[in-house]
Length: 140
Image (cartoon, rainbow, N blue to C red; front, top):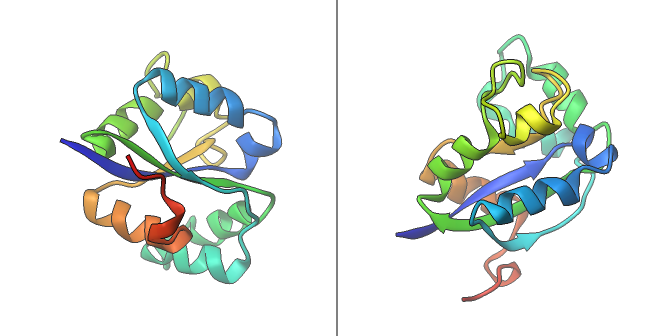
């Protein structure tokens, strides 16, 4: 079954000019981009988006990082999109990520790990609505 998930090319990768390579990598893996935008998150937006992590030791650093530059949220479509994307991006720590994954290829560190991916279908839907309206998505 084809479904959708959300990804964000984070400020480290976007600022380093890696967005095109990451998108090409994902498209070569069978993902279709159905919505995309470039934006800079405010502290309030980043705090709300990552509210699930509030209270964890890395929360403040994550919000600061995600507001440090432009990022690129995208909705991707593919069969089993959530699981397929998490496989395609690799482990959070690029040192532990499998060869050929986005993070192994383009991430700098565990904290500057190039890309976000939703972790469930429910979160993919919620996170997609955070950045996009239904009319923003390509039909097809």
